[in-house]
Length: 147
Image 1 (cartoon, rainbow, N blue to C red):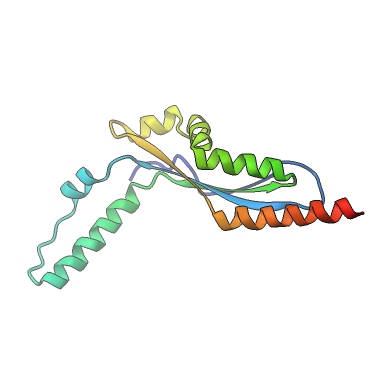
Image 2 (image 1 turned 120 degrees about the vertical axis):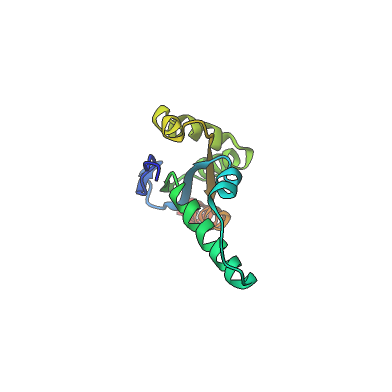
């Protein structure tokens, strides 16, 4: 089993110190770029019944893929400014966020642990988090603008 380079953790930080904050969860996961050769070479079954064979192949493939897990990180980011939230979302959609995070998460030690196999980074942000955060910050701005 490869060493866990990205340890599961929860990070929380704020972009600003305002009273109204919107939370956006960012998930960053490292995985091997290619799994097909490992699955072809490492998954087999001696079961004769088709259904038993399928279940055994699925079970073995799932186990193999779990051993190839390089880890993930979840970050809860708090935004107090609509412009910052929108800029973050735009960077996520354009791929700029992924490119910026590659330099942080795909380290030399991760590359060494992966050996000859390539590593890719998967980044996800829930659109519902963004939309809810946006509504919250707009309501806050509207409320603050009337006071």
